[in-house]
Length: 127
Image (cartoon, rainbow, N blue to C red):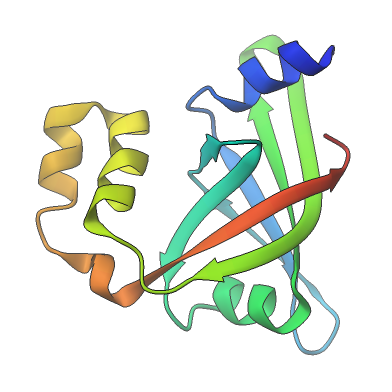
């Protein structure tokens, strides 16, 4: 893919898998939804979750975005910074990207952003 094609691919609402490394050196990979903004990937998770702890401890993560219908993937690996706390607007933006406005408003009505953090991946390799 050209850089422009990769950016367009990453901007779509596709399934992704976030990979981190736990304290024992084992891979931890989980499905996530993400935003692609300003050349970085944003994943929201509960504060204290395994992926949060791993990313904070190692400062690294990898993301694999998958469009199985077209047999295409994009992977990105790099440094992670943690945003804590996150805003309601960020959580709403993420859910709107995948679900549309009406469903996103319902999904975020619980105010759960107070217990969440954002993992922001700045891709270095594979992207």
